[in-house]
Image (cartoon, rainbow, N blue to C red; front, side):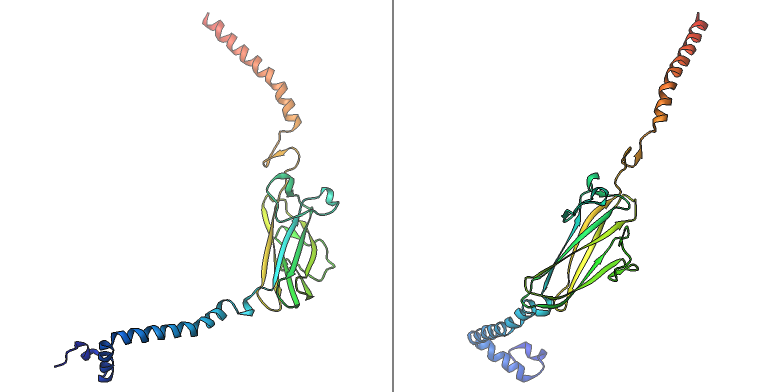
Length: 239
């Protein structure tokens, strides 16, 4: 009679004999199990390191920074670039104002990059101000250019402009992608707001015209006079 009831569920007698042998050799079984586990770890660790850390195709080789200019008075003077603009009236753009974007692309890798393709996506409320630049795609609202032979730690800077075409009171983003010939694409954006309030307008509600105010000044005494006449008539009727 078989002592181990597991024999009936095992696929064959050889497996059962191996199981019974290892059952009687508990110390040896645990020793070999630990040894095999250690060997498996040592063999797979380099593969895991290469998969997660040593894949050159997945490392970013470029770093792109996007800035937006502060509004200028009458579109004159130099540009003051910041990472983003707030929602205050002084930092909002009006229709037909020119807004500028600064793009900085730096090689953060260990070798010279043969080519970096930079694509700048304009918001719907902003257009490119000129028609003589082949880098502008009006259908996609994109400004696209290429940087060649960007050395290690070298930085390429370009300033491009746009003209605000909307008087809507909204906040928008200008987006940019830098795609090197190897490694991952880097991305950045700059936020700014449109719809600056004009003089005599507060929070989108227009102030009352001067003629309306003067009309109220003349109308007020007449209202008080009419009210006095009515009250006088009521008093006489009571007497």
